[in-house]
Length: 261
Ligand code: ADP
Image 1 (cartoon, rainbow, N blue to C red):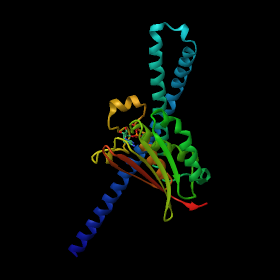
Image 2: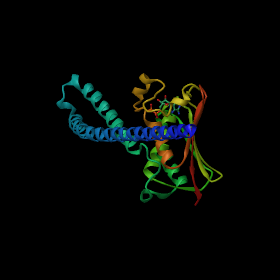
Image 3: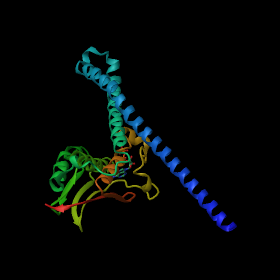
């Protein structure tokens, strides 16, 4: 009888701690929601003053003769900083919105031919590659389509290809490929760039992480490009991974559920 009572007692305790855990989880979830809302609100609120500053600077730059010669360079610096901040705010807003989202709402999904999406994207980035005399190529080995959000997919692959161009020295190569692997469309973006060390590999998808902050600041990125690429891949039920060898190059691989056209 006594041991029965003890068992009952323990059961009650287990139940109680279970309830406590549930309560704490709810609180964590609530503060997560609040933080997410705050990031979204803050990014949103920051946009208006930035737009106003940009408009004023554009007017100034249209009439450089009205600016004191000594200040022309300074206005250029302000213009660059405003653009950098605008990008940051845009990226943060996107991440805050997609945070915790498991998938894209059905109404936003369309059937997209990956082959033509990548073909067009690579063509539009050719000028950027040419500025560094980088050979940018695309090979589509399969006619595949995915269900997704077109703008987001462009953003995902554009982030990867622009990084490849950014982190590859002049006269290097950037190769984009699309192949089919079982029921997946596999897109690889491979470069002959500086590479990423094995210790840094687990960090690349972290928000604001950058291998060389000083140099990259000048390159104009926000340190959020790969976090965004990962968030988009996740909401498209895909997988993203990276392999790299220092001094040889890097390869990002994105696989997405696909079907033949
Ligand atoms: P950003 O490019 O704006 O710095 P990302 O999130 O796109 O931010 O990338 C984070 C960091 O990962 C970069 O700063 C760079 O150090 C490293 N990285 C990304 N892509 C490559 C690449 N193709 N080759 C070498 N390093 C890369």
